[in-house]
Length: 151
Image (cartoon, rainbow, N blue to C red; front, side, top):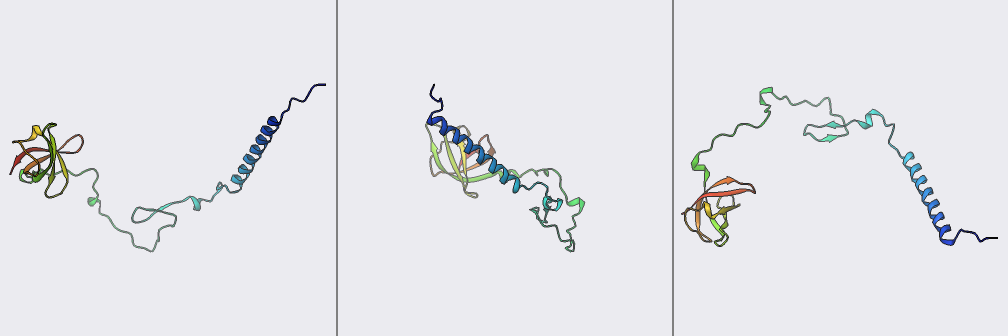
């Protein structure tokens, strides 16, 4: 008569498989018991308050609603007015300039932001801590200074 083909490791694997299946069934039953299916319509409704926040409480009908005139509603972006050329000229200080690579940065005296400048946009050679006037242009990676002149 032959020996049984079932070894200790096979028995252990079968026990693990059965335990896993039982755990899975138990979790499934727990999910069914705590399921939110079949909720009433009231539990599923959401409301928007005066500030635009989503809440679960309905608005108070006794509270007076704000009236908005139809003319005050703007759809789209309003046209930008043309700026005076004198307003476009800014002043600042060269905080960094690498002459070998040909670029640097200007710190705007009003906004304190750092603006990129390339040597092609310089009117005369500059070095660090020079006071300059410049105009700002929107570039690919941010603001660029153009028409840079020493003060």
